[in-house]
Amino acid sequence: MKNKVLVVDDEKNIRLTLKKALSNADYEVETAVNGEDGLAKLKEEEIPVVLLDMKMPGMDGIQFLKEVTNKEIDTKVIMITGYGSVETAVETLKLGAVDYLRKPFKPEEIINIVQDVFERYKVENSEKEVESFEEYIMLAKNAINKRDFSKAKEMLQQATSLDSEKPEPFNLLGIIYEMQHKQGEAMKMYRAALALEPGYKPANENIERAGESMGSIDLDDVNFGDDEEEE
Image (cartoon, rainbow, N blue to C red; front, side):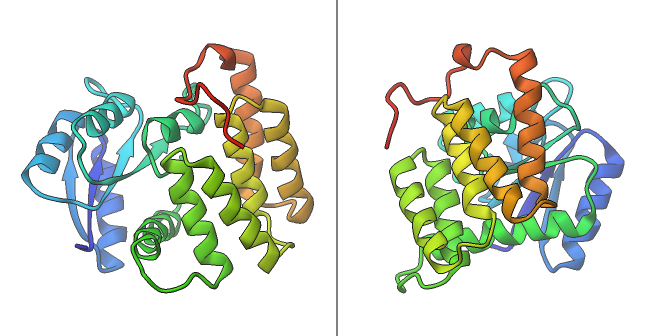
């Protein structure tokens, strides 16, 4: 797997910042000024990971994700969203994003999330037995992205059995429940994560985002891709 990343963003300063940070972390970086340019580069060569801005003129991030999915392009998309964006992180996961990051962000946050996606790919395709908490979390994220909620819950249960004091499994369970239209259960899981670690940023952001979406989007009208709930 090539250690290569494509940055798709219409803002020049963002592209330069991301390219510099990732290049310093030994990643090979390509950039694209919009969605159309990004898709053209993905058709020319295989690029394992894409950092994609949600809000762009012309083809936005949501349209880009749909094109990647429809054309079965083999790449992992990390969505970059603006603070208070109407579109939810759950919707981007539903459309095929493997993770998301909200602006403003620090360069080290981008490096960490890109490293995490590459590690998840390695763990998913490794034949060795899963042993660590981190590996179970990575496999759970991959299963969520594939809408295999049963496997994701199994992986999260295994992770919790290894360390019941970490918030990550509960936050991911919250995302699963949101994707299954179980808003109340999702909020319980996010709060459970915060009970373990009050400053845990992903759960705080998910509670804030879920509260905003309840005021602006009727979740019953959103197709999360799961007509039948999985246990």
